[in-house]
Length: 289
Image (cartoon, rainbow, N blue to C red; front, side, top):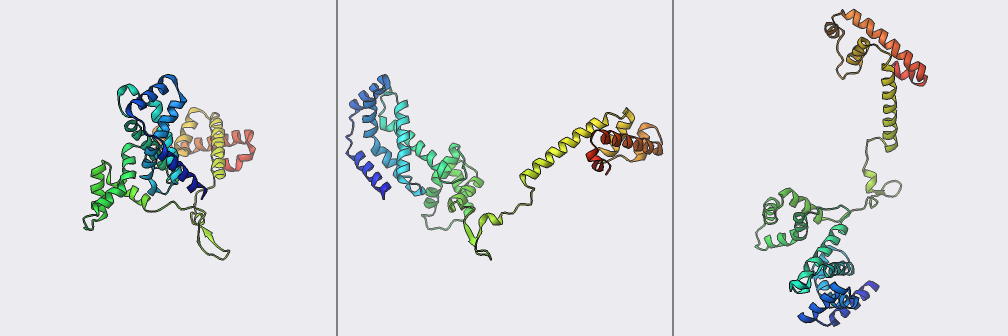
């Protein structure tokens, strides 16, 4: 009730504000630009609050408070006043209309949904014109399929049909809270979030695993330094590659028998275990697994 009363008084005050003649408007704009005259700014903005209210009323069907739309429109009006160049001989209302509309539209895009929509000019045009174009295409009485309608709208607005379909689905239903109750269970009720089960590990488990893996990788890198060149090559190709080489294939590469490769590998593994046991006895079980 208080908001409705405040809005009504705002509208009444705007309607009582006097119109500005072209010459008076020009003089006020010059005073504001050149002298930062606050009185001049107040007269200009007060005289154009009708324009703000009229513009805001065109967006009242987006489910946001009219008072908020008017407030955002007033922000756009002030931005227009700050940028207006009176020497161009353009009426202030003509110039301010774009800024008022842009400010209101930006506010709607930020607050209409918790899911942030596209901010490109094409996406904005799609958001604010989709309902109007759908209604226009339906006026002929002919039932158009969604595919045909999406094609017509995408052609008119210069966006893809997939973008039209996605925006149409967003405009078809409001956001739903994850805490909203869905069905009753033995304990009383269940929220939407109760059905969003994830098999992924918890964040602390992910972090812990990442830290452990980094630590063990560093330990192994240090231990590998005790191996000579041939031992390191055999361990790398036999144990540290995704597809480990066979004893026979590695023997052919090195010009030795596969039995000799096995012996060198066995000795290298013993050296690695010894290095790990010396510096990190707590991971011996993992290293010898």
